[in-house]
Length: 230
Image (cartoon, rainbow, N blue to C red):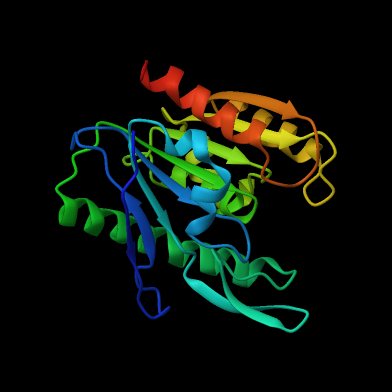
């Protein structure tokens, strides 16, 4: 299907900045994409063509923490989902702040466009996957599926959810030679979810830390099967 992207921009004081593409059916499934560190909403269109071709609503917010990204003589604004200085405090506090922000953003966009999705998925890459694990597990009233790419489940952030379990279904995609987030982390994430009673599938793919066509293909194929889109 042809995509018609509606771009929204606002100051980055936890306000909305998103790329939105809508399916003609208000009840179609909905995908929320959480980009990687220093990226933005445009990375969904650039790196996920098969995901974008699914007959679903697509919403790609910018992480609410804006920062400068310098490369040579160029400067651009990148975005993050949480703050991290090597210690757990700011990391956890910012994640806990952004989860309700994302819920409010999603609710507002759905009201604005008259959407009534029958199911939702969160697809997160790298930092977006770290955040996505916590956001999806804490928001199982919203998300039925999670695709976590090159990230890690921080179990200390979601202990109550792991104890109580739930119906969230997860696909973990990870590069076999990822130097930023070792592949063993994905195995531990899978084990933690499985031990808590969640349905989880893990695929280890060639290459390292990065967005490649096989990640896009695997995520799109899994959601097609999960949602019976064929």
